Every structure is written in C-alpha cells, then in structure tokens.
Image (tube, rainbow, N blue to C red; front, side):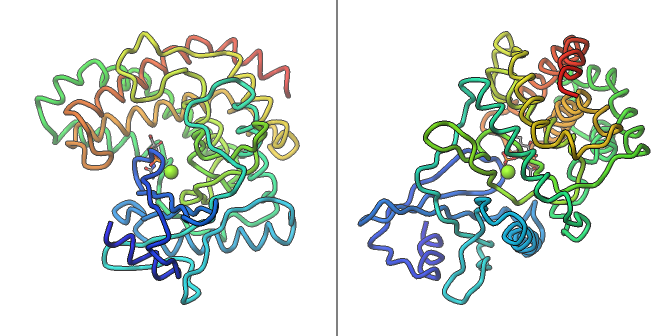
Length: 353
Ligand code: GN1
Ligand code: MG
C-alpha cells in the first residue's frame, strides 16, 4: 500500500483526502479504486504485471495512437485513456512496477456476472464498434503487447512440452482432461486453415469479458475498457472470448460442473450485437469462422489452464492446489456442450448474415 500512496502523490493527490480500495477481479494486473473524500470523483489506479507485459510502454504507445485516431474520426466516442502525472507521463515507472491512472467514468457501472441477454448484446455491440471504428486504421502500426497471445499453434505446442517434462502426479490427475484436449486437436487444424485463408489483422481487444464494458444507468453499453491487450489480431479472439465467458451462467471458477450450461439466447445476442456493427466490415471468409470462434477460445483457455497446472501454476497462480485443473475441466465441459450445439449455432448465424 505504501507504494500506492507514493504513486498517487506523483499524480498530485493529497493522500489524506483519498480512500483506496482494491477493485475488480482480474488475474493479471492489480487494480485499485481511489475515491476522493470531498466529492464523488473517483479514479482507477492500475499496476501492470511486468512478468506478462514485458514492455508496459508499448501499451501506452498503442493507447495513444488509438486515442488520437478516435478523436479525429469519432470525436463523440468515449475513450478512457490514462491520465498524465505531474511530469506529463501517462505511465509511471518505478522499481515496484509500472502504474497508470484513469478517471472513473461517473454514472457508469460495470457488470461482473451477466444478468440478461441484453447485456450480452450491448457488450458485443461495443466490442464490434471498437473494431469497426478502427477498421481504417492500420492495425500493424500497433505494438504487440503480448507476443503470440492467441496463437493456438503455440499454445498447443506449449501444452505438449508441458506433458513431456512436468510433474508426474499432476499429469496423472489431469489424465482425462489431457485426453479430451488431444481428442479435439482438429480445432488446431481449423486454426491453421483459417490462417491460410483471407482473414484480416484488425484492431482487436483480446479480453472481452463482461467486466471490460462500461454501461450507463439504463444498461446501454458506453465503451470498452482495459486496453492492455489491444493489438493486431483476428476478430475470432473477441467473439470467441464473449462466447467463452457470456454463454454459461457460471464462470471458469465454478467447481460444480453440473451448473455449466449454454444459454442459446445469449449466443444469439452476441451474434446480433457484434454483427450490428461488424457485418459490413467482415469479409465473407471471415464470417465463416464465427461459430468456430467460440471453440477456438474455449479450447485455447482450457489448454492454457491445463498447461499452467502441469507447470505448477507459474502463470495464473492458484488459491487452492488444483485450481488450474478445475478451471481446465470446467472449460472442457463448456467446450463439449458448445460442440453439441454447433448445428443450432450455425442456423442462428444464418439469420444474421
Ligand atoms: C487473464 O487478468 P485477466 O482476468 O483480465 C488472461 C486472459 C484469460 C483470463 C482468464 C494477459 O485475464 O487471457 O482469458 O485471465 N490475460 C492474460 O480468466 O493472460
Ligand atoms: Mg485483462
């Protein structure tokens, strides 16, 4: 906490006049809400995890480029960019890490668990709008903040290597999950096919969980936040992570797998919301991979959790011993339900394209 106070002083805060609370539930960065005692004004302070974002200045670079482009071409779009410190820097580097500060947008709220399919529609629309507004912007001018972040080929290879060298006990406990992922390796093959098709690199958010959308008082989407993983990528990353995180009433942390379900009307809401912005932007070939997007992301997340489990939780950490195994099993269960609904999903998609 000491360091947080020091950082806030660099932004000109009087630390006697603020109240600080831990905020949100991200797995990677640390986030605090800073409330002013004398008014309703509030701020969000974030420490970037530099084990994962090795060059925080690349994040700042990307956000600056995008902010300028949006200001020019879509001046009414609400874009939450980092504030400057007393030395006019948008990122404060210290020995304890790199920090950024944002205004807390007043009259806005975030949602941690989706309550209805309208929220899925609104969120999908916001992520679609973000990519559409930047569709004339050259995505390749952005820095890659995490190399190979959604490279499924690499994620699969990392999983294979973890199987070779790691922990026998854990590998034994993970036997069924390992077999399930190996049996579904055709998802990696389809990913290769996609890479060789006419798929375009676009400005992609890469972390479309519902808590990364700001809503107004009427539950209308306002904008997207948490832009650390904004970089060149494929739209299936954004659509797929919405499917991964919006379709089921329970999250990746749920241990009772009987609670994992797929709400088909939420799938339709994602299709409708995303395509309400992106239908005219995506080419015919890209559209072919819309349903695949969900498989791609659920499968990749299961691989990542299981790989981390086999590597003793070095990436995600674990609050209890088998947490990353449970997360992987949870995602596998979600994937198997998703696969069984594919024909129905394809039919729904046809209504919108
Ligand atoms: C991480 O920290 P958080 O929750 O925003 C991860 C995502 C995963 C997610 C799974 C940089 O995101 O890719 O989907 O956990 N981010 C990074 O909960 O690895
Ligand atoms: Mg994130």
